[in-house]
Structure formats: C-alpha cells, structure tokens
Length: 117
Image (tube, rainbow, N blue to C red):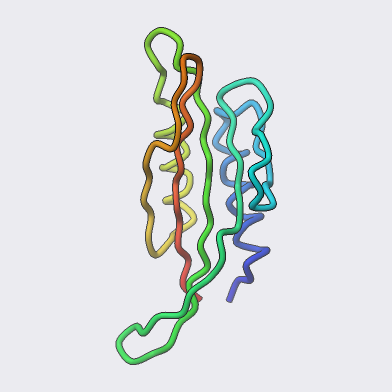
C-alpha cells in the first residue's frame, strides 16, 4: 500500500524519466507560477476520497499533473502524449485530462490520476 507522498514522488519520477520535460516541479497545491522552459510539468497532490468497491471501502488518492507546452506556430503535442503514457505505466485506477489555459505562447493541460489503496 503506497502513501500519498509515495504516489506523488512516483509520479514525479515517471515524468522525469520519460525524457521530454525540461523540468518537473513538485507543487504544493497553491497557484504558484510554473517557471521554466517549455515543455515542463508540475505535480500536485489533490487530496483523497473514499469509495465503495464491491462492498469494500477503499481510499483513492488524487494527483494532478500540469503540463505546459509551447503553442507558438504548430504546437508539438508529443510531450503531452508521452506524459499520459508515462502516467499510465504507474497504473492509476482513473486517468483524465483536459486543457486548463491557453494564451498566445503556451498551453497548460491538467491530467488527473486516481490511485486506489
């Protein structure tokens, strides 16, 4: 059984080892600015919830991964797809993604992973 801290660190390591990010940050859940050269990623623990799984009460820890890409000209989505593949390898119970923000220079995606313990 992995703790929330272990899950968060495993997520950071998976993203660092996928080889596409210039930097992988560990966020504290605040709205701090992601600084660095794109593509970059930031990992934040998003809390936990309890659920019933066929009569068994389980805890699901939620991790949010923010992926920022350069969007000038034609955006290269390879880092985003590589991040999703790396996160799938960590075997989450649930995985979803969506675009959070976009401006004239960058796009930020949010990938949410749920791990049941």
